[in-house]
Image (cartoon, rainbow, N blue to C red; front, side, top):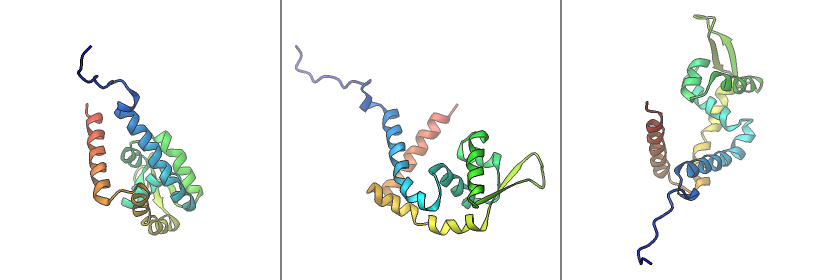
Length: 149
């Protein structure tokens, strides 16, 4: 018998980055749920609204690219946001094959309420803004590395 410590099991579930990321993603999205519900938004709808608050109007194609979603996945989200009165979808005046998504007055007004979300999330996660910025930066690095071809 050796007195050397046993090597960590690299195949142990708790040692897997993919497992930690999956659990962290589900858990953090769960933290958003009760904050977004009173606004009538799901987390994916909130991401769409963030993209539109950043740039409005946008084509469905541009939104899908920005959010890294397939247009077929984005379409039902947009339909629900339109039914809620937050966006309108119309054929582009420059290219009728394209569908433009525009914020309505209600959608623009929702931004003011949404400004309270980031600090509430930071508080719920018990993390400082610099810690969250560092985490976000690291995750963007992971995304870039995993997306590189």
